[in-house]
Each structure stands twice: as structure tokens, then as C-alpha cells.
Length: 241
Image 1: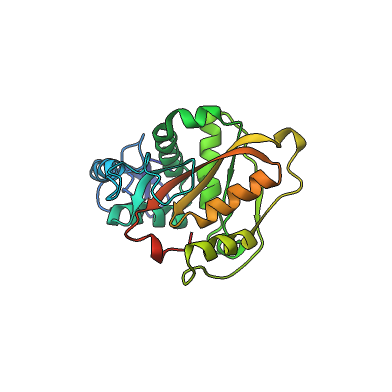
Image 2 (image 1 turned 90 degrees about the vertical axis):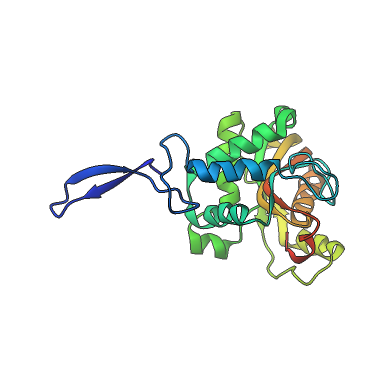
């Protein structure tokens, strides 16, 4: 997405260049180098430093009721967090994905330096057909580019159905049936240390199931889960992932 908006006159000629409108607030202008306006960036900074009500740590360090060896950039639930996730689901904005992926990698710190490859939790084919892209793959692709690591489509979606009415144990069992590993992952990319990306984690059932499948298939020696957002314990019971 360009940092400028091109405005044309009746003859199709460019009349002037305007700063791009921030995709989050739809009010302020976003600078060329950053996809969001200053006001939304300040809200994002506050969001990233928000503390878990249980352990008192930020999302990048909180592991309350989350899969082991997982990190997130911010807690999901507030207005700005929802706008960011909804925008990525509907916007297909690689510039925003790259910006957020870099913030996530920085927050994860030394964890990412031990990785050999990058993969992602695949979106359903129905949703990909509707929107034209997979936001988790887009985030993972930008992270792989930044880190100089291979992006591997190691997982495939095979099941259907909702998890909203299931408990955490049932969600994990259900999630294991929804995904499978790709048997055609090259031998050179098996037995490696993987970063597994997704946009939102609620109970952790989906990412836990995907990490389990990657390890048990021999594709991954170890898996680190990185998500943009994670629901805190107050709202986790109402989610699906």
C-alpha cells in the first residue's frame, strides 16, 4: 500500500498527491514510512505495554493459560486491538503486516534467533476465497523476509466446524482434527526449529494442536508460537482459537 493517495482530475491526469489516510482511525494521515498515524501509533504503544491482570506482565512475556514457548505482541479485546486484527483480515496490507511482524519479532527477542524456518496456521479455503489472501501467511511471509528464513506451508486445513461451545480440552481435540501436516515438505526443511505464526490466540487450542502436529510428524524439532494478539484470561473462554 502506497504512502500517498493519487487524486486525478476529469482528464485522468494526476492533480496532486495526498498523504494516505490511516487505515485504523480513517481520520488522520499516515506518514510514508509507517502505515499508521501518530495517534494510532501511540494507542498501539500503550496496547503493547498493557499488563496481564493475572501475572502483571505484558503480552510478550505473559504465558498465563497459553501454550508453552509462545509469545504475542499485544492483548486482544480493546478497540485498537480489534481494529488492527480486523484490518489485517480484510485489508491485505503488506506494509502494515511487515510493520507489525517486525514489532512482534523485536518483542520476542532472542527466541527468534534460534529459528531455522517459518510457518503459519492456515486460514480456511472458504475465507481465503472470500478475501483473496491468508493474513497469517502474510504476517509469516514478512517475518521470514525480515529474518532471511524460508517460509514453509507445513500445515493444511482439512476440517470444518466451530469451537465456540467447546471447553479447552475439547477445543484441542477438535483442532487436531482440523489440521494436518503437508507430507511434501522437503527433507531439508524437516527436523528444524520453526516459528509458527497466527494473528489471534484465544485459548491456545489451535496453535497447540498445530505445534503438536509439526513435532509429531518430524517436520519440527521445536516450535515457537508467535501471534500478534492473545486474549487475556477474562475473555479467553469466549473464543475459538
